[in-house]
Image (cartoon, rainbow, N blue to C red; front, side, top):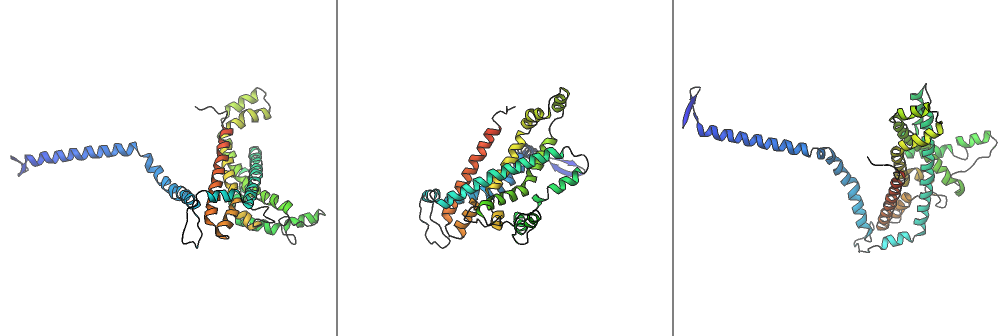
Length: 322
């Protein structure tokens, strides 16, 4: 059957099929829109997950696989050895010593940078004039690469023409070889690390303080509560999530410290400053023991995860959900 529209014949069947196909297209478009709206969050987190998979998850799986075999750069065969590499690493005195050095480094570096950064954040809140300029000056160390920081402090600590020994000479104190003595080298490297990374804690804590509500603090001051009680009862509990972020970032960063130690002391003197990262680097690329280095990196990862879990549990033990 046909009819005329505008002087030309139109087939009724063609019109019916055309309308049916249009309805199917609208239904498909509607369902596709609903599907994309329901799962649109994957479009945002999908790229990040892919990058995380390639950069983090795959290397962990690969290192775990390598740690179960005997692998070197020149090896043709790679026999399966199970947990033998883990046993040898745990029984290695140099590995244990580097682990103890790392714990010393992490504890004092994180503690020092947190105390100084927290204190600076509290003090700068009382500054009224020139706060922006002062903040800019305080964050200069964190903008420098660790290798640059290490070279700079090596020159400043030079026993012959270093700036530090020049100041000591003005005070009548003889020049010190701080990086060449086992009793002072480890502490010196820790102090340099604190100098570079306390601005990170300062920025995180200051940003957290800026988000705190004013009403509780004003009410406490009107009731005559002392500043110490306000700090202990209000400021610290409210900043607990921010403190956790600052401590976690600093702890993980301190555990993987490599470049600063490599430039300043290269693990010496007598391996007193050799960290786990530096030890694993030597094991893999100097002694050509890739599988043992992979096993050590997995042990290091597990230890960092354990420390992070303990920090979460301690800092959130009194926090109520909801």
